[in-house]
Amino acid sequence: MPDPVPPSPPSSAAAPETSRRGAFTPIPLDDLDRAILARLQGDFPLSEAPFAEAAAALGCDEATLIARIELLLEARVLTRFGPLFQVERMGGAFVLAALAVPEERYEAVAEAVNALPEVAHNYRREHALNMWFVLATETPDGIPRAIAAIEAATGLPVFAFPKEEEFFVEMKLEARV
Image 1 (cartoon, rainbow, N blue to C red):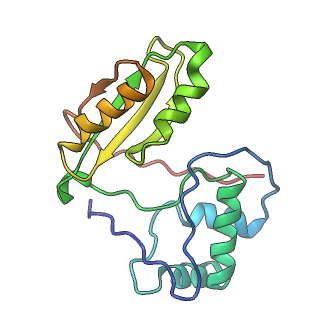
Image 2 (tube, one colour):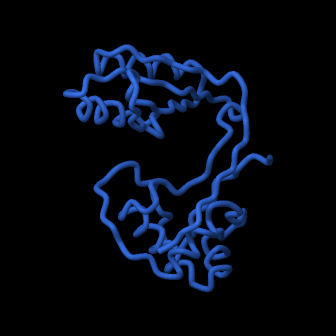
């Protein structure tokens, strides 16, 4: 699989920002929304104007595409829009990590963990280790620093599960009404 390359934001409009968290606001999806969701789950153009190129393939203009992506992020139809990187190939590191969070502290701990820019994909599990997240850092020594910061902020031990083997699993979801 080729390394993903981040798309460049268009020069005429701001690129959609990743929406990490926020309240869920259901919105009705129209045909263009469903087409955007279906089309942009892969094959995002790698070009000087990727949003304009993707918009043309969807039959809309660049500003409309960006506005729709922002709305889908805001409404939490999408929780993230952006490239995935092979961080190790860029000299960085990532690790799957977990915490056993007392239920009465769950929201406060989630807020503290999510405040770190190294944290992604934080989600709840029905397990003794009930909070799982990915740490991604620019250098391998950033992982122990991030873990130490989380332990200091939460008072809870972080269980780190470094990657032993990598698999590529692609999943695309159909956007239906």
